[in-house]
Structures are given as C-alpha cells and as structure tokens.
Image (tube, rainbow, N blue to C red; front, side, top):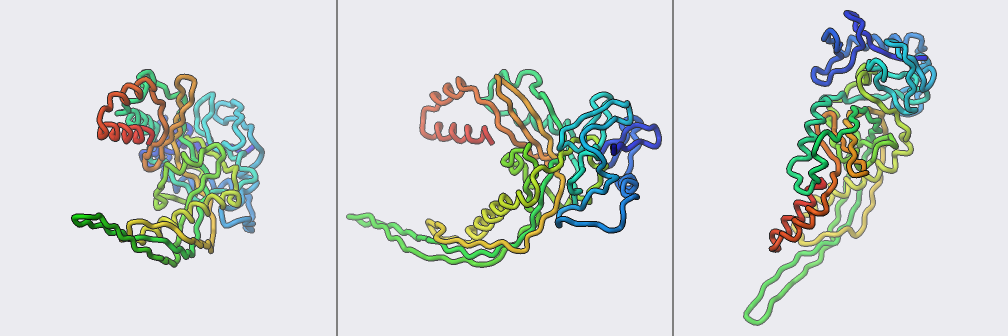
Length: 360
C-alpha cells in the first residue's frame, strides 16, 4: 500500500511543512529543506508512469497507479502502527507516534490538484484569533470564556474547484429621481421615471466552490478572499503535518453554485454603474456564461470545534490571510438586561447594531 512520509536525511525524523518559514522542516534536528528538493520524492512515485497521459477534465490529472495503490488502511513506517482513515482524508498524523503522513492510498480514483495555497499561519495564530474573537462580546456567557473550550483544532487543506468564465449581460433597470419643495401652503413632490440599460461583458478568474460535503458552503465562502497569487503547483510535501480532504463533490456538480456566484457578482458589478437616482430596481436581466473552465486546488483552513451547554460551535480561520469566522452563544439573561436598559431610541438602535456585530 502506498504511503508517503518525508524522512529527514540527517536524523531520520518525519518532516513536516512549516508555515512560518514556508519550507519543509525536521522538528527533531531543525534542518530545513526547500520545496524544490522535496519534488524529487514525488518524481520517484511517478517513475513507473508512462509518457501518455489521459485527461478527463481540464481540472487536474489522473493519479498514477504508484501514487494510488489501495484504499483507507495503511501501516505507519515510523512505528508500525496500523491507521485507518476517513474515505476522504488524504493527509493526517499517526495517532501512535504523531509523525505527519500523506496517505497516497486515499487518492485512488481522484484527480491530482493543479494548485495548492500553503498554510502561512500556524495553530498558535488560530488560537489567538479565537481569543480575539471572544473579546468585547458583552452578550457572551461568562462560562463560555472560562477555561479552554477548544475540543479540536485542525489545519485542513480543503478541496476547491476554481472556475474561470466570461459573463455577457444585458440588464434593464427601473429608476426614479425625486424632488421635493414647499411653499407657504403646500409641500410638493415630483418623481421622474427612467429606463436605464446596461450591456457588456465581464470576466471571472478562479471563482472558488468548495468540493467537500463536510464543509459548510456558507462558512467556507465567509473565509474568502484568498490571494491566488501565492498559489503554487501542487506537491504532496505541502500536505505533511496537516489534514487534507479529497473532493467528494466533483466539478460538474459544483457548476450550479459557481454559476449562481458569477451571476450575482455580475449583477452587483453592473448595478454599481447605475448612479444618480433615488431608487433603482431590476426590470429585466439576461446573463449568459461562456468559455467556462475548471481547475482543482487545495486551500488552507484552520477548523476549531467547541461545545457549550450541550451545543456545538464551529469556527474557521483562513490559513493564508487569518480571517476568522464563526457564531457565538448568547446569554439570554444578559440580552434582556441590556435591552431594558436601552432607554432612548438612539441607545436602542446602538444596542441592535451591537447585537448584529456580535454575530459577525
């Protein structure tokens, strides 16, 4: 069964990708290796592969037999312990000795990623972001902040489909301009109605749609944007020391969500050009998408799981930018207390705004 572990040539320890130095590093002797050096490991896995490649899609390439031999169960080369992973888990650590490993078996029948955005922020940064996320939340139950409520924290490479497309749009708007004035007897209001037309094309690059059913789509979209300029060609060495999921939603099944995002963004972009009116509403919209292609990538995400009062809460941090999202519990007694203390209209409005920001 194919199992890939990067061994330090100096001490024999298991190597892992270090997000701080953006290199593969030995945690035992602190020797660092450039990613280009580790590329030879991947080439060894391909040495039995022929020159002829079969492409099923523009996203990714087929894994060779040497890269994907067997499924799920494998033996850790460091300690000999047998590990059984989830069907979609592609990288993890040995539960017996803690060494980071990449489970090549799990890639059987799937496409190899085209790109990967390496982790830039480590677990300590995620914990700090979580602590910062709790600060200033007046309605947060005090018991929730006492002690360490983090049950699990994992750095996960989430599978994403990246869609490129062009949108040809023709949108007609109903718009009004209003004018008011008054004299000693009456107050007047005049409304002028307009038909506003916009037409043109707009291009979209790397529109992301997560390809894992485990990940909540809304939560993943909240972590955007990612800086694709920092994406690199995929190497399995980047997975060492992290958990990696392979996709269980293919590109074809993700097209619908990508189309929705593109059309919504197109409508927003065209709407922003209609200015100088008091009211604007869409009267008719026609958006056609052409020249669509898809690529496959892995994006870095820190997932934090907590529980309180019988409820589970999931938080996520963008492993590249540090953007942190997640909902918090609310103390209902504190909510009532603050609500009734909000005496004036201005104070009440400020309180409502604070409640909205609480959940952001």
